Length: 87
Image (cartoon, rainbow, N blue to C red; front, top):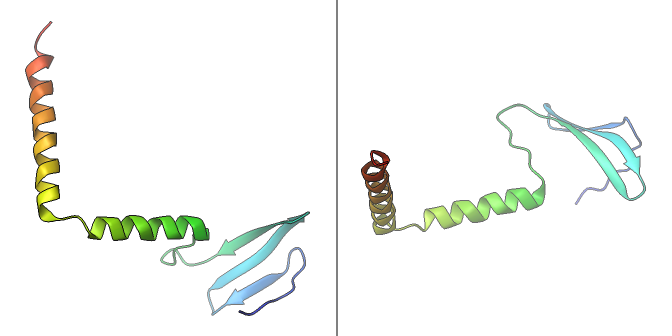
């Protein structure tokens, strides 16, 4: 791991097109400004890990699970259509 010291308003470059600027320092919190191309996703690590977990879970869905979910949705819509004309 590369460890750098920076002060407020100083910037770190990653490659040619990602800039990380120290925006503010208050106590034990540092605010960072990140300027990156739109095609480069930028997430807090905990959000990134949650996305990875969700993607893995979605990849493990079996075709029969999708068919069952589709049947439930069809039944729900059929029930709503059957009751919406009453009243």
